[in-house]
Amino acid sequence: DIHPAAVDLARENVHRAGLSEVISISEGDVEDLHIPDGVSVVLSNPPWGLRLPAEDGQAWKKLGLFLKQNARGGDAYLICGNGEATKELRMRADSKRPVRLGNVDCRILKYHVLEAKDKA
Image (cartoon, rainbow, N blue to C red; front, side):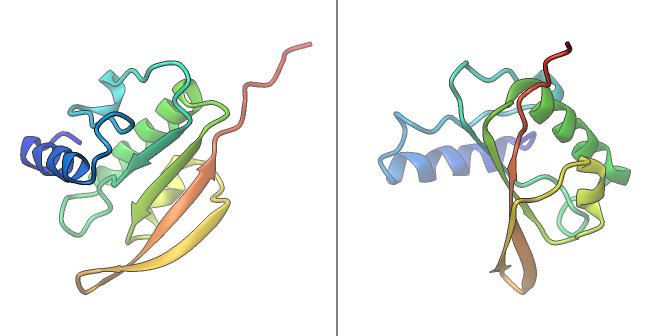
C-alpha cells in the first residue's frame, strides 16, 4: 500500500493476530516492491475507484506486471468492487468470492500466476 496509515493499521492487525512471523506488510508502489524468494501468496487491495481513484487502470497494469515478473508459480488474492478495473490486470481469475465491505459488494479474486514458459 502507498498510504502509511493503512500500512500501520495492517501491521497492527497482523501483530494482534500473532502472524508477524509469517506475514510481511510493505509500503510503497508495486513498481518498487521486491518480494523474497519462496513467497507463494500475494494479497492486495488495489484501487478500484470508490475510496481511491482507479487511476485509469494504471495500478492494475503495474500489479499485473509485478505478479508476472515476481510471483510466478504463486497465488494472488485481490479485493475489488469494480469488475472493469480488473481488466487491466490481463489475467483470468481462478475463483471469485463475493464479500461485502461496508455497503459495497466486492469480490475476493484468486489468481494463480503461471510459471514462465520455456523458450525452446
